Picture (cartoon, helix red, strand yellow):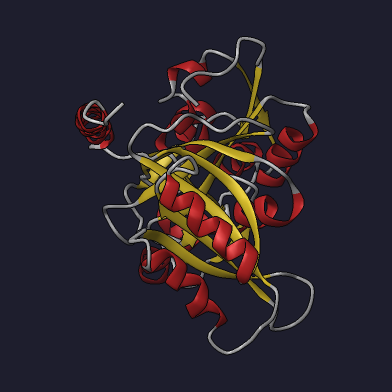
Length: 314
């Protein structure tokens, strides 16, 4: 998605204001220039995008510590027909915050979205071993809720921006278990596949037709035979019956690439049903240089081939 269509007006994201999702969204100037609509939960965002209520949805899909955000992957796999338009990665810094006057020793409850709480297990075990955790739909929702609470024993795990927005005091900063904590976000829409850039990723869901010995190996061999690198492979229950699983796969390349298209065609024909979740520009600090090199190599290859064709006898 090089830029949203002129008719697109609304981008839904996990709110309220102050979430990491909102911060990641603001790193994308073309999306941030549209009307931004904070929504109550990740499924709310994706279902609204699927119904056409909003033009784009913007949600977290993977964290470096906790792995996939299953609310996102399951909704994309089972409940909507949406296409990923781009991915965005951002470092995530988590903090413990409370109402002014509350101290760390006062805390008996910690509120946040479960994905964030799970990223801070070591801190909670060491500093607040007797505190119970409670779930919120987002980090900023947790911060907003405790700002209205009269309790002096509750804290939230949220971004620093949330403390500013909701008048809270930082009790501890950078409490995530690992310092290089990143989250991957995706923009999704009902239709459209961005043009190939030379540094792309394709996401699919593979549903096996039969749970037979070697079936997963047969699927993976289709990629190995074509030297297609997989950046993610995850199994998820299909929710149809116990022991029935599908596979979420991210692979390097674009659906317009001959080898990628051939691999997906072969899997769909011989092994399993494939749900296409999109081909889109891959994120990363080196993305622009990789794309420039790919375009240069492609131009050189085209010139080489044109030279060969020019030698054909008439």
